[in-house]
Image 1 (spheres, helix red, strand yellow):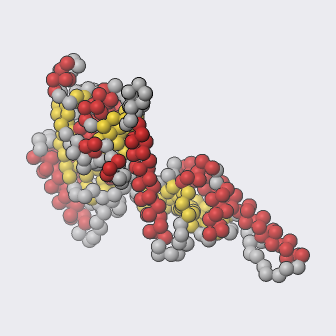
Image 2 (image 1 turned 45 degrees about the horizontal axis):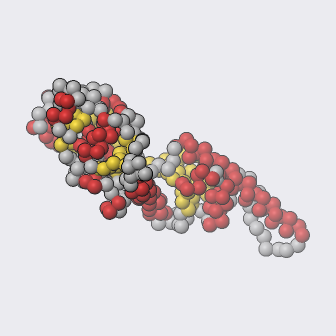
Image 3 (image 1 turned 180 degrees about the vertical axis):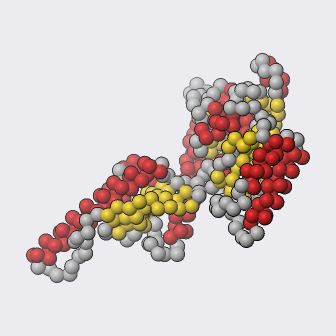
Length: 368
């Protein structure tokens, strides 16, 4: 997950209100239920010590979702009476929640907003293709391409003129497949798509697949069920889930290899809070690996005003010259450090448990 969108959260000091709310349920009572939810979460913030103006800003932001048709949910981050960031979620939170803490509680975003592949579904036939963009917010038309229209059908006769006609058919199919591949390449670039899903007959899918640039081949999935099949949506969701799983597993394979010291005793990976804190202070984290429910995720660490002022013990910050310090969750402190140094972060929940970092926190390092 690219953490650049979180930068506004680290441009101002805390404390911060962090709220996660489910908007996936839609009934005739939804507006009333969401008003009650807004009031309840605002009260919860107040009970944790949040100031009145910030509670009001959060409540008003949530009340603004009374008639929202968002399919999953929303996160709201506020301080000093102002909502600073309110990203949409890719999946509903397990429960509505509100946190008041020195740092914004951003760790849940790795699962709720970060791991939802953007995909372009291409509905292919002999005459062209229609494209559909699927994201966490739903689906939308994403254009189409029309190739040559004649001739596109084979015949069963065998005289010379019909053989010549069939050759034209083959040429038309090849031409149209190339045009579809070119248009799909543009779609991928415009949407920064993680997946390209081809829907159509076997031959048509294969023809387009073969004509895509080599760099896109690993992004392509050929759906086993065609247009109109009730199983097509299941094919798409399976492809997206598989993509998330494979990405997590590939990172874990790299992590397993990098954690082994080289000939000079240096490792390209770190795990455990003390090692990660040291790497964060030295700006060495390339990608933070988090299992949000891991035991180390909510372990207490100490932070200063600057992102690289983070330590296992409060006294360590004083040794570093920091006079002001606050306790924070380890995952939120490490995400702040990662975001402000251009590192990425990834939830590894989908990976095999045996391959995950000890305690649920690890990192691939920029240099050993």
